Amino acid sequence: MTAVFLCFSITACSHVPDSRRRAQGQDRTEHACSHAPDSRPLKNNAVSNKETVTDRLYSQYDKWKGVRYKMGGLSKNGVDCSGFVYLTYLELFDKKLPRSTRLQSQIGKEIQTDKRRSGDLVFFKTGWTVRHVGIYLENSSFMHASKKKGVMISRLDDPYWKSKYWKTKRVGF
Image 1: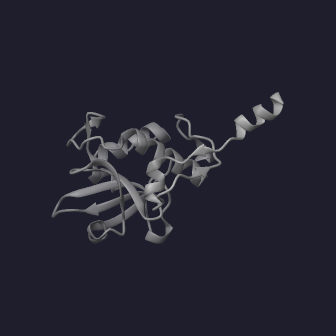
Image 2: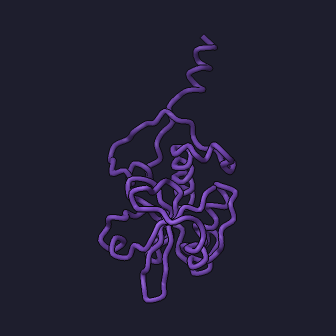
Image 3: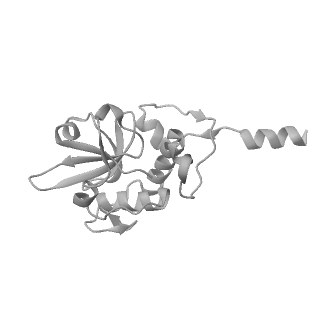
């Protein structure tokens, strides 16, 4: 009996975070049989597992959801879009990216829209010289630090973001 309980507790299903259900357009509670992501940076071949990257990104979002936008900010007291990307890559993937959106847009490999993967950077031209960056999740959704709503998940097919889309870059882990 103890062995059965131990086996069940090791393989039990974990709850899918609310943020993931919302991004996937689901409105009911759902469970996924995967272990909760840990906080250690991903290394080598673990990064190639799409679910692991995606799960870690949603976990990061759950920690930062609603943190207000602050130009130049790098903390939960306020963060800007490139700062959120910078911190996420550093914390989850142990990869130090440039701090500014302009410099982040200059690294990595440009990716076709139909080849996007979780963790790719999505860039937008929101003004004459203003650029915005977010991290692609899945199913045309991305997380970013919005000036109006702070850290949030948005959809690439939203008319605003669709009209401002510039490019996707893969910077690797």
